[in-house]
Image 1 (cartoon, rainbow, N blue to C red):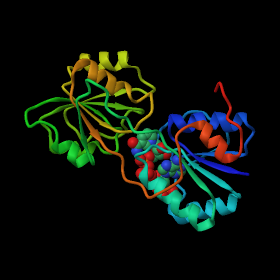
Image 2 (cartoon, rainbow, N blue to C red):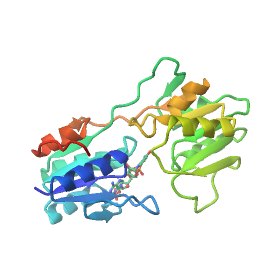
Image 3 (cartoon, protein in one colour):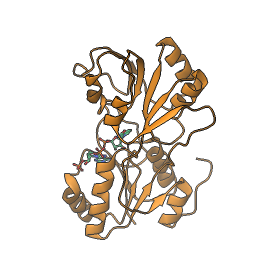
Length: 248
Ligand code: NAP
């Protein structure tokens, strides 16, 4: 068995530890978006494969027999390419996907289907918006220049931001409710915009918003074609035919 682990998330790093501990022959794949990606206990490759055809060729050429897609729930293109490529070369694929967040009592969420609707959901009057959606989609918010934006990014921006009125915090999760509460208070945030990523480390901003009584505009996940999904690392290990490793 030879596994390709598509990464870029906390869950993928957890899977990498489990695979290494279990002695599974596996390769970890990063898109190469961040300047200093986390070290992994597996051999790492970096960069796109060149679409589904490139990925299919990679699977064939490197003798991969299983693919675990542990990319972010909003990395839909990679996940769709994995479905196409694995079907083409007949390699089993499993998506290790975190469950979406669901509201708790006291949450004030407006769920929207995409980033364009998130922009439309902002008030007309100037607001102070914590835009917790990474850097790729922030350009769309330039159509609402009356707002002051707070961005949290993994790396310092290399080019000028498309938002004139923006403060940037450089930080890498996981985050805590206490830390995010303090951050939002410090910047007098009135609205939070986030993606429904699921998972623990990124949920802190939603818990902080609830504690502060702030509204959250929550972008729904992109719809994916049907695929086999595991919700826990133990289920991924079972799918591979390995007993779950506890205590990791
Ligand atoms: P995307 O739009 O689905 O993917 C764009 C292209 O990047 C893919 O077609 C593929 O290029 C390449 N790619 C993506 N993930 C890859 C991986 N793990 N290994 C090799 N190539 C990869 O993805 P994205 O939204 O830009 O996200 C990029 C990476 O950041 C993902 O790995 C994801 O897990 C991580 N991430 C994303 C988000 C988010 O909100 N989107 C948040 C946190 C982390 P080719 O077509 O050339 O193969």
